[in-house]
Length: 242
Image (cartoon, rainbow, N blue to C red; front, top):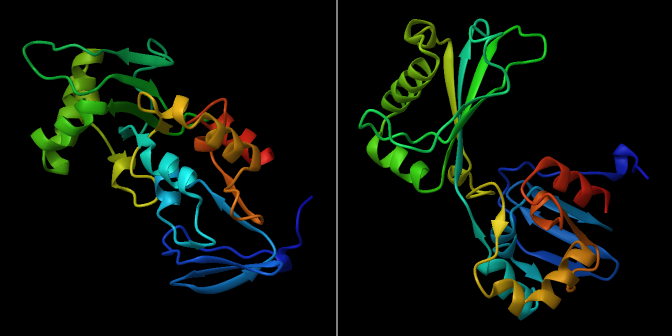
């Protein structure tokens, strides 16, 4: 059931969370925005490693802290080129580029590109993934935004055999999850060898409660806490519904 708006409060993603303290039947959340006293607290979209760094009273049980702090995050960048129209249609639709190899003795950082244009085709948007080691090399080898943009435009132009159209870009957007304080990676947490087998009961309990055993009125929602669809929108939805 939905709560009345008067019974809900939120903190911005930029808020620096301080100890979550449970007192009686209330939970106190402190941040740079101030203090909030509530019966229930929902933390949505926060990665497991980031959540483990939030101070809270009572503290996370040792096994939960060990598990969450050991979960690793991959690294992924979405690089988008915006055009005044989708000039590659109708010849190219859907997944329009897929490559993980070196071409013409040049390093290809991009693993795949998708047509990410809006449904009304009012703009043309090509979105390219740059992931893992290629992501790190992309920023190391091309340290300025101008160099990175030029590389992606060149890649798209060569891929579609139309460098003039590719160069006529309105703007570019690069979204690297590793740079964001409350994600620090993408798409989701993953278990290093031995972690899941050693902490299976802890992970099962954590997911069953949608939160730590220590905090009875604090809930977590996000794709990192879903058994299915970890790192994707369907997992986030299932976690929220649960």
